Amino acid sequence: MEKFKRLKNEGNDFVKMGEYEEAANKYSECMKLNTEECTVYTNRALCYLKLYKYEEAKQDCDHVLQIEDSNIKAFYRRALAYKGLQVRKKNMADI
Image (cartoon, rainbow, N blue to C red; front, side):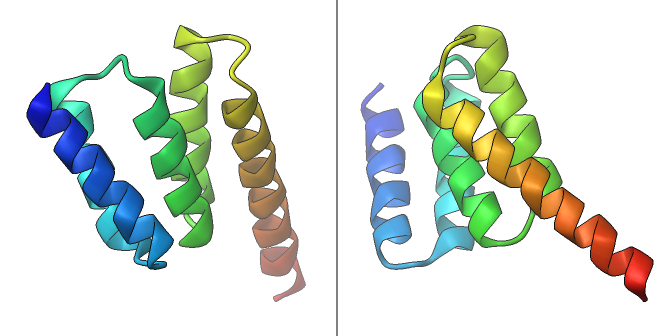
């Protein structure tokens, strides 16, 4: 559990510095230790949104909502992911 907390804190520090790829990697390591901790999924979803990885962000939020069906951050970030996917789809149609 101590390693989990350390990795999560390192991920949080990377987010604060705007290093979203590194933060996502730390959160992914956390998930190997505990797949039921929703916070790391919503945090990684935030990173994916910042990296324009909308499908990955949506998947993380879907996972959280299977565990906690009223998680507000997961709903909000999934909505942002859907919005990003729609914008990308529209831009591809314009090409």
